[in-house]
Each structure stands twice: as C-alpha cells, then as structure tokens.
Amino acid sequence: MTREEAAAVGMVLAVHAAEAPERPAVTGPTGDRTFAELNGRANALVRALRRRGLKAGSAVAIVCANRPEFAEVYFATHRAGFRLTTVNWHLTAGEAALIVEDCEAEALVVDARFPELALSSVGVRLAVDGPLAGFEDYDEVVDAEDTSDIDDPVLGSTMLYTSGTTGRPKGVHRATPPPNAVATLRLYGYVPGEDRHLCTGPLYHAAPLAFSLNAPITAGVGVVLMDGWDAEETLRLIDEHGITHTHMVPTMFHRLLSLPDDVRARHDLSTLRFVLHGAAPCPIVVKQRLIEWLGPIVWEYYAATEGVGSFVDSTTWLAHPGTVGKPLTPDQVVVGNELAEPLPTGEVGLVWLKAPATGRFAYYKDEGKTRSTYVGDRFTLGDMGYLDEEGFLFLTDRTANLIITGGVNVYPAEVDAALLEHPAVADAATIGVPSAEWGEEVKAVIELKDGVAATAALGDELIAHCRRRLAGFKCPRTVDFVDALPRQDNGKIYKGLLRERYRERAKT
Figure 1 (cartoon, one colour):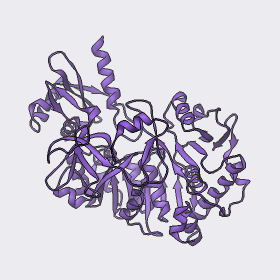
Figure 2: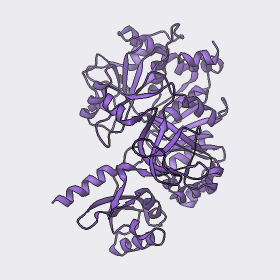
Figure 3: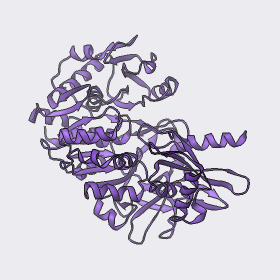
Figure 4: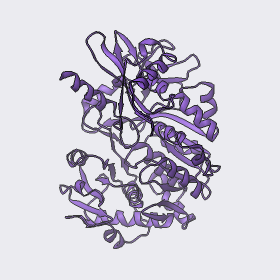
C-alpha cells in the first residue's frame, strides 16, 4: 500500500510502523508507545469496538487527558470509519452529557481521572487507567484482540464542538477532511526519524489534535505529550528530547518570556526550528521578543475549528508586524459587511473565509446556525479585521469583544497589547462595562506579576502607560486588579464571562 493509498483509508500510521517499528511515537508522563505499539493497539481497539456492535459511521466520544490511549483511540477511529468527538474534561457532567448525547456516541472512553464524567447513558463504555463503575477496563479489552493490521480500513472523521462561550456548543461536522491538513504537513517540513514534536495543549482542542498529534504521527514523527502546561517544564522537555517542532498559544509566549533570564539560559533550545501559533491575537511586542529570543522560526496561522485562512512566517511578519499573513489563495478571504460584500482596503469589517469545495463544514443538527454562518460559499467566525494595500490580513478583534463607547469602536486586543508591555502586568483583559454617559466604557482587568502590589497609584500608572501608546478614547477609564483572570484551559481568557460578572454587578 502506498502512502497515498494508506492516507485515503486512515492507515498511514501502519506504513510508518512497518518501516520504523521501534521509533518512538508517543512519549509522556503516563507511558510511551513505539510506532509498532501504537499501530497494533489501534488495530486491536478497532476489533474490540466492532465486536461490541460499532460499524463505519458510528460515533465514539473520548474524555481523556494527554496520554497514549488518546492517540490509540484517535487512530483507531480514523481507520475504522468511526466519527470521533473529543470532550473537554473541564466540563461539568451535565455539559459533557449534552455533547455525548448530541454527537450520538455509541461508545465512550473515559480516563478514570475524571470519574464525574463517566456517563452511563452510552452502550459501550471503556475506562482508561483505573476502574469506573459500569465500565470495562480499556487495557483488558484491547489486550484481548489481534494487533495485526485490519484488512478493511475505512477513513473516519473527527467532529469537534465549539467552545460554547457564546451559546450551547455545536458540533463542527464534515463529510470529508478539509484540504488544509495536507498544507499543514508540508508547512512543518518534518524529517521522520530525526524530528520530535512537543504537544503543549490538551488534545481535546482542535489545534493540538490537528497540529500536535495527527500531523506529526502522520508524518512519521514522534510526539512528546505534556499533561498540563508549565513554562519552565516546556523548556526542559525541549532540551531533554531535542524537540524540533511545537504548537503554542500567545499566552504561553508571554509566560515563557516572563521567566528569569537564568532560567531561560539553563535550557538548550538549539534543536527547535518551528514554533506554530494561533487561536488568539498575539501582541506585537510579545512576538517581537519571542523572535529575538528563538530566531525566525515562529509561524502564525489564522484558523478555527471551522476552517483556515492564512499563515505567515517570521521574516514576513517582521516586515508587516501584526499581520496573520496573506490568504492561502487570492480569494480565500474577504473583509466585508454582514452580506460578505467587500469593503475598501484598510477598512475594518467582518472576515469571511471561502469554504473548500470538499471538507465544507456544517453545525451538526443545526441547519439554522449553519445558514447564519454562511453567505454563498463564504463563512465567518465573527472575527473583525482589514486587508492592507499588499493583501496582508490584520485582525482587530472578535465582534463579541467589540466595545462601543460614545459611538466609537474600541478593539480590546489593541488595549491588551499595550498593557502587556508594562513590566508589572502578567496578563490583561480589556472589556466594556455599562456606562450611563457613554453606553459602555473601557475597563482593564489586570493580573499582576508575583510580588507586585495592587495599588491605586499603579492603576493610574497603567492608564497613563496606555495614553502614551493609544488614542485617548481607547484607553481604560478604570483599572481593576484580580488574583487570576478566568481562563480556558488553552490559556485564552473568558472575556465573555468577565463581561457578564461586571454587568451583573452594575445591576445591583
């Protein structure tokens, strides 16, 4: 079977297992797998699930930390024609149950670390790394089956759910994989047998799953899994394993750059040659400092679960600071109004992406939401931005975060970036709060670095700091200090939750 034929039926892992059986495929704090072991256990899991009634088209849900079993389930479902849904293990039992029920899961794999999410409503239930009432032991089930390659593979799929920060989560469903997956593999330029990829984020998220599990393993490159992110541990793992590739989010960059100089100097990062990031706006000063430290190895993409718009390398970004790159094709991106009609160059509007001819997504069992997202062959993620004269895309913020104060638009990401330049600030979230005079006014909610005292004088200093960098109407009128900003587990701040807290306070 050629690689192309293997890819068409989800069996590329099997090709690598035959060529380099002892090469490390997955390395982590809870166990390791060679390519041969990962491939064999994926085959065994397919047989076990088929024996329990699953067939091509069946749905499988997984609630699991970053561990080898997650990879086994992923590659098993993708060679058996199953549809895999990953579930965020930070959810409540009720929230998780909504997703498991909505995706119509016939099998559920649960890490025993999360017993509260061991839902009993699914017919086939497997428990990883410990007993769960009403669940079969995952290892016993897998160990009982033949590990040889199955002789009737069928390409499966993944259906991930939106974060739900602006409503009930919806499954992003595709009948076929998007073509951008191939572009990502080419972008990384992997060298099998030499390269190693560090997975920094939870695998139930779209970006780590695609960029830090599927892409490297498909290329024959081993993955080192982090079970929870820590700045210094990231540097240690890069040094220990000779990491060449990784994917991060901007919050991680800020935390890495905040490490003391002697801590950063303690670890050899010379093997690192590709750092990919996305998922949230990256302040210009943070990215500039990162490139100064690591060199021109930082790539950025603009994408979400629903689709991909652009990529940009370090050299191009330094020439156009703040851009997320040129669209993948000239017609891939339109900045327009609510009807996707193009706006003049430089004017801020909604960013519309062109849906691929194959791999077009729909929100599962929600035709209304799907229709509201598309205009013709274009869809929007609710992001706002503009295209410059050379065709480079710049993002300003999301429509949900936009502050309208006195009839003027303020994009919080711009204010956050200015605040993060201040040496006392560990993280910042700029939001709009109710104002009788202005409709909304700009407020900065600040998490300070360790050892920095929260004082009224510091709040005044931060406002003055912004006024030296931004137009006055954009600057915070007030500053609040908090011990910790509410964050998603991938590092992004829950601005919606923060806004709601302040709106509730305003009512009292």
